[in-house]
Structures are given as C-alpha cells and as structure tokens.
Amino acid sequence: MTPAQQQAASLAWQHAHPLTMVAISTIASLLIIALIVLIRWLVSASAWKYHPGGAGGFLADECVRWTAILIPYLALSIGFKIFVYDLHPEYNKPEVWAGFVVAAIAFRLFLRRLPFVKTMGRHIDAAKSQAKAARRA
Image (cartoon, rainbow, N blue to C red; front, side, top):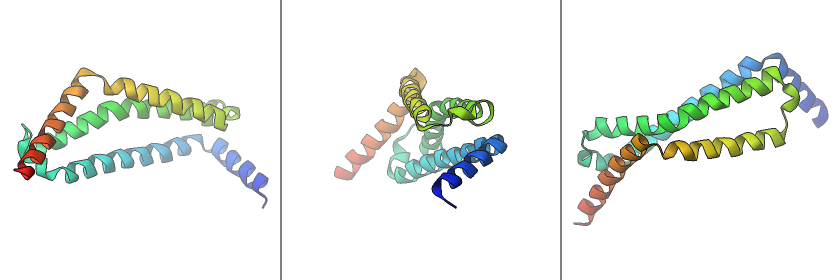
C-alpha cells in the first residue's frame, strides 16, 4: 500500500468512526493528566509536611489546579474533534489543527490566571520552598 493509499484509508476510517477517534484521544488525554498529577505529587513528597493540608491537601491542590486548567481544555478539544471528525471531515488538515493548538494554548494560559488556581499554586510553591529551605538548613 502506498503512503497516499494509507492516508486515504486512515481518513476513511476516521470518518467512519468519528466518536471512536474522540474517545481514544479523550482517554489518552485523561491518562496523561492523571500521570502528570501523580508524578508531580510523588516528586514533591518532601514538601507534603509543609502544605496546610498535608499530603492529601497537596494532592487535592494539584488535582484541582490541573483539573481547572485542563478539563475546560479537554471539553474544547472534544468539541473540536467532533466538529472535525464527525461534522466536517474536510477540515482534517494540518492548518486547522495548528489553529486549534494556538487557540488551546491561549485558552490554557487564560485559565492559569484564575484566582483560585493561582491560590493553589501558591500553596504548592510555598510548601516546596519550605522543603528546600529545610534541606539547606
């Protein structure tokens, strides 16, 4: 099979199974988010005792912080994928995906500036700073 035939077969499969494409990418995104939160939590074990809520509070802040940033992004992503895969497969082009990536990055930067996300980030950063200071002392 030539590369052109492979690409045509891939696009035909995507068009025939749009919700499967959305489900696969959504599950992969959720797994990546969970992995990021877990790794950040485990790497910061020395800071847990300096967080106002202990290890559980640190994990809760990490979860809420990343969830507040990435779940709206995930919803935007799901909507965009349904639009591209199901409603308008002719838009399944690199230029359209590049536009989505730019919009998603801008949206994520906006969400990071929400007051409660900043507050949780400050809790986490303060606990990490205290852990670093304790190691140096």
